[in-house]
Amino acid sequence: MLTKQQAKIFFLVGTFVTFAIFIGLTIYSLQQVQTRLPEDVARGKHIWEKNNCMGCHTIMGEGAYYAPELTNVIERRGEPFVRGVLQAKKPWQPNGRKMVAYGMNEQDTNDMIAFFKWIGNLDLNGFEKVDRKVSPLAVDHMKDNVE
Amino acid sequence: MKYKTQKVAYWFWALSMLLLTIQLTYGFIMGFARLGYDGLHQWIPFNTAHTVHLNTLVVWLLAGFMGAAYYIIPEEAETELWKPKLAYLQLIALTLVGVAALAGYHFNIWEGRKFLEIPRELDWLVAIDVILFLVILLMTILKGKKKSTTVWVLYGGLAGAAVLYLPGMISFDSQVLDSFFRWWVVHLWVEGVWELIMGGILAFLLIKLTGVDREVIEKWLYVVIGLTFLSGILGTGHHYYYIGVNKIWLIVGGIFSSLEPLAFLAMTLWALSMYRKGEKKHPNKLAITWTLAAAIISFLGAGVLGLAHTLPQTNLYTHGTLVTAMHGHLAFWGAYASIVLAIITYAMPNLTGRKLYDHPRGRLAFWLSNIGIFIMVSAFAAAGVAQVYLERILGYDFGQVQNEIKVHFWVLIIGATILSTGIILYIIDFVKYGLPTDEALEA
Image (tube, rainbow over all chains, first blue to last red; front, top):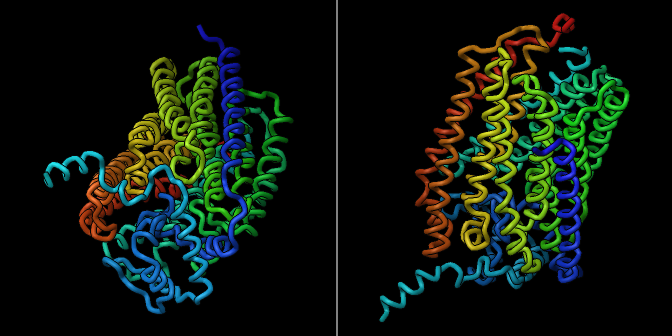
């Protein structure tokens, strides 16, 4: 039967080993992450945070699920559309959900666009790519229908 | 109660009750906004309501944990709290920082990082406050007659939470790095050190409520927290699938996060078997009910519902949808809200001397709040699965899909109303107990 001492050793050793592996994997992963970013991308991220865009939208799947995912927004909606939304001076209500009117100037808009483009070009293991939206099963089904 | 200074706990829990009320109120603002009724948008847009909802959740739970620590540690260490006046100062400071943060969110003063929206200037005040809290507790433990495993696990969880707050204070230009280290705080809190805090409180409650030998309970406490870290630390990887880091996390995160339910399963089995084994049944049946509910529902919410979408093959479709909200709501309710409500239910008769152990209002509060949360989670589940199918598989536009699934938000509001009724009854009970008194001191 397990003793309290053995249970304690299980806890301590298990924690130490997994934490060591976690730190190792972190170091390994971060070596492959771009740390120096173009200034406009960094400014764009700052504007993203300052306005708490994540409080409604999601980016890389993280946020509030109230407004659309923006990881791939430039590819999906096109730059002029995004530019128009960011610079709108009056609140608008796409599909009944109100968005704050940010009325951004040209510089801030450019920075936000740069930020979205940078995110859109990341390798996200297939997340939020247009072709991902059609499941493999659906693709086969569509092929069958066409044939 | 056994020591006069345990009374400090009451005021932390009073703060918890106040913040819980605010959390529910802002939850309703969000729920109605999803239905198109957002007349408050001009003053409280959705991002403000969302931030207040999340931050009041975190702070009411933290205040609940702090209250639990101030109640449990003197009793376990068999000594009065070290410098109780400092504990009151710590409470006032925490309240002021909380009020400043919540007010600021209504004026766009925030960081815009989910769960970590508190501005950096206030972060430092939070850090000082928590250091003061930890010093008071450590000094109490050191001057105490006894140093139990339960106390060290509880203290370790609280100290770990403080240390893990630091990575969230680092500033990054890269969204990838920002997200990577944000999860060091959020994931390693809720699927790591907070489970230690929960385990510590649960162990204390089981010792008090079942009468089972401390050595047996604490042995299994080690097993539970061992499984927690064994799976939870590398399980952080399930947040790294789609944020632009190495593919190795798909494998590591997938395997280890799939093991995370084991810790919660162990916690459930531990609590149930200790309850069955216990020969001395404490008269505070409500406290026993909340305690067992915390152990069982945490397994369902954090364990089973987490497992449902943790594998990368599934998460590719569910990530960033209402499926996550489904899991999040039951996980927080089962694991953390319930354990805080359990320790309060156990301690209030002891602090006030009013032995309201089992009464209809208390039972109604338990059942209504639990039925309400299950209705809410069912609504999120239905909405989330429909969203995944329509948006992620059929490729419909986000806004169109949200309109299609609108009916589920009505169900969500109904569930939230039932939950809130239960919580209101719980708070009425809390108020009716009255203030803690020295007359309640056990001889």
